[in-house]
Length: 400
Ligand SMILES: *Cc1c(COP(=O)(O)O)cnc(C)c1O
Image 1 (cartoon, rainbow, N blue to C red):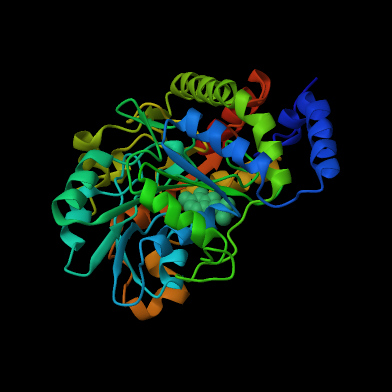
Image 2 (image 1 turned 120 degrees about the horizontal axis):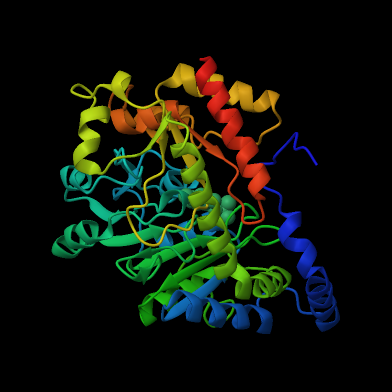
């Protein structure tokens, strides 16, 4: 069978083999008559705590609400500053702004696209209450220097681990380092629900209890409100369905890693591609003034810097924006799913214009927004599909 299209993500391929288990689970929740929190949620919370290796977990309504709840539980609000990367999904900065606090943006590493700890250090002020690193595309941010900066100054850390369930940093999982870890079960994440859902993790029993109360409007006992919370509850049905998928997560992650290895092997055989170099070497190509992009191989492959990378996305870097846009156009014509994560960094978003940032403030993030494209990486991709993608990327690059 010749291949003439490859989707960016085909959720059905993972769902079909588990269809019976899902149907049974639907029936169980239906017959229980209990649709919010309850036993199903407690069971998922325990399973996730065991999987992640963290003391406390709370099922919540989405990854976005996980971040908002974590910020609220740390009492973040007007007058406070929260440091986060400018190159991320909107929810990271959006939730900060919704609390009334000010997002303070930092640039990212040109190698991993995760927060640059040196820039974090430069942006710390008396008002800094939280540092919020994002584990972008499934690879942990460089947490050691971030945790040290935070600890020395009594600053909290919230890990935006929405894309990083099961990712590891120095042998320990994402979501176990900060005061809070925040995960998303959005269907395109590695552990996807069949709707919106998320998870908050923490090692701190007091914070866990506070977040638990705030998950249901801050009422304890019910209808007596010592603090203001919200409705951040997870559905029993979503919790139960995620529980069916969780035992398969490690196999799925391995599938993604094998696909990444296959991509690397095929791309490197083409003489157009190289691995993204390490931080020291990267300067040579990516530095905003000293870098020489024209001497770069046209295609750079994602470097695995922190074990383990769970490849929520496999993101290529092209030599410049013109080439990236040409490649996207070609992939479109060949029915190959692809996406630009993310075309506009947070500091250039219209809704944050009052913060006073301008083009050129974060050169590495701006370059990433112009030069990267994510290609299909979901676990059930076939070798033929991967070959089709590689062949067409290579053709596109040769034609530029
Ligand atoms: C997906 C995502 C979120 C938000 O999760 P939702 O479940 O969609 O609300 C937050 N941060 C990052 C980095 C994400 O990728």
